[in-house]
Length: 267
Image (cartoon, rainbow, N blue to C red; front, top):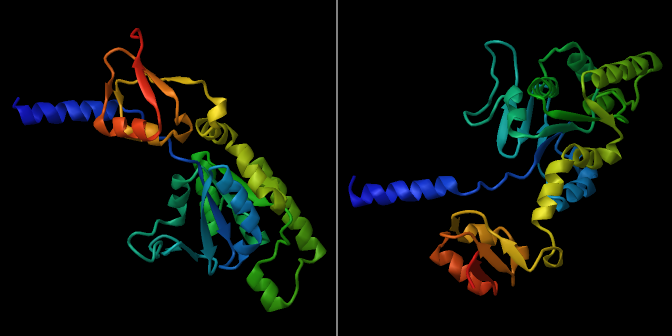
């Protein structure tokens, strides 16, 4: 093995030994159209303030919608499932998220989900999320009739027989593990589901006064990213284990943040 290969091997070993930065929790919100999300702006702020990421999927029909710049479609066997080569099929979307939130569900989609049927984006996403063990949260105070149908039929509610059927379907969704909660409490429900991860992130970003004056580092290589990802350590001393290495960039960060290092067992 020549010097170049040996150096590359050592660097790879050091990189593999570094602790991986945890990905923040992420949820997908599915809305009926491109304006339906506006009423939930405050809830998005609440999630962002707790370190929860989110994406919006705005539907423009029963089987198509947009997530950012990707147009997503679903269909039966042999039919189009993605309008561009980079857009995932609806059944693939929950793989990227910790959970799915559907603020407004209608009788059609509730019935499909309760029966395990697909054919619409909402039904396929919920089916996939439940199979993958991801949480699903649905708004319980939706009228049960689609926005497009309300505009077309000039009515805001289902007739009593269909409303009773809608409530029956919501009860069946609960049996499947779907959480049905008031729309104004959707963000709170998401935070409950992600409580452990949100609390862990909060501890990592604790205020300087919450941390001891000396912080113990247990790795073998103290690198700049480890320090930059912990801004609350500014002004503190880092206790290193014997033999630990401090990279040149890490030394620069230590000086900038007024920090010092000390190897355990040394004065």
